[in-house]
Amino acid sequence: MKNKLFKFITFSVVASAFVFTSCSSDDSSPTDETKPIEPQDRWITVAGAKMGTDGTPGDGNGGTVVYAVSKTQAKDPEFSISAYDNGFAVHSQRTARLQSTQDGKVLFNIQYTGVDGGQLDKYNVLGGNAFGFIKGANASQYVGTSPRWAKLFDGDKTGIAVNVTTPAANNANDTSLPFKYYRGTATVLALDLENTSIKGYKTYELPLSTQEELEGHHIFRLDSPVLNKAGNKLIIGTWMRQTNPTTGQNGFTNGRLGTKSIVVDYPSLENPTIITSEVDNGDTSGYRSFNAFVADDGNMYQATQRGTKGSHILKIGQNNQYDNSYVFSLDSALGVTGTYVDSWRYAGNGIAYVMYTYSGTEQGFVARVDLNAKTASQVNLPYEADLNFGQYQGFVVDGDEVYIAVTPVGKDGNIYILNSKTGAVTKGAKLINKPGNHYIGVF
Image (cartoon, helix red, strand yellow):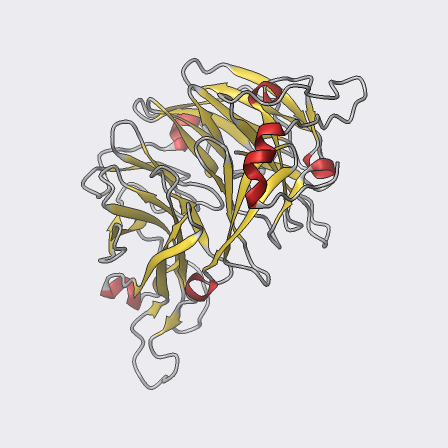
């Protein structure tokens, strides 16, 4: 099937008449969907990451392809999807960092690196490999060509992109001065997703305590901004680093600091402050997906990575401070050591699904987590050594159902539908893979 690129002015005509075709690689499988998608239904878009030109399996550096099907097709284990043969190539030199509207009708991406790095792209989902492309604003002059970003849960209106310039010593240009700190300049930028434009931005340094900075600690990266329940503060995750002021070498020579996040006023993006958890010492930046969520109780729950105690789920109260009385260690809950949260998603009623690995293996697993009871149990899926969720991005939460893509690198897999209320697991459509590739999300 040839890729189709529809102009925006034709959306209403195309969307009303569009009929899409199955991507089965097996002639005995269903070949055509003869009825247009029902108006009350939603698209389920799968995304696949292609191997880069250097031939490192699973690196995702060869770009991203997407393909949209109906919920009925996504739930059908006899239905096959081959996004690599028939999908639409999202504009991105490396792995696209995708977000979607709650109803699955629109995808967003800020291009990562390359000549158009920093550009906000919008895609109207029309089914199959048909995506209507709208070129938006380019934010590279504010947040660079490789910004981290996330869509706020504010009715799909706003995205927040963040960046920190390479931290430099205060005496980098004059070594006769005494060393005081390493700092970069942080930028927090708001994007209007409805009009694909820039709303505004703020820049500032983010100083730690005097002693922490003298020891070379600094904020290396920002990521995973989340809007609090009151809608007046953004909580932004951090990736911490320590650099030896004498040698310039990176490494935690005297231990990691407590977990930190940045709090800024919203929508002004002003008045940055740093909050610190005493529960864990890991980072809160995540990788390529959401890393914190506001739950039904109004509090925010945030995963940690790269700490010395395994991943934790931390609680930030409605006062925008860490609740140090809430201790939820995934090591303890799962009975393993060195857990690492690759990606996760809040599903409602205190239940979340976590993709993780742990010490001694690079294999990925999925756990159903109860944030209220602080318990976790491994989901019954077909695990194997080549299953890796390190680049995973997209979960669809549709009522009690959570859709995920499970494909080992270079091997076929399936969409799975997890019932957050009952814990039941249902196998869905088959995902046809290619050597070195893997599917990284459902949107």
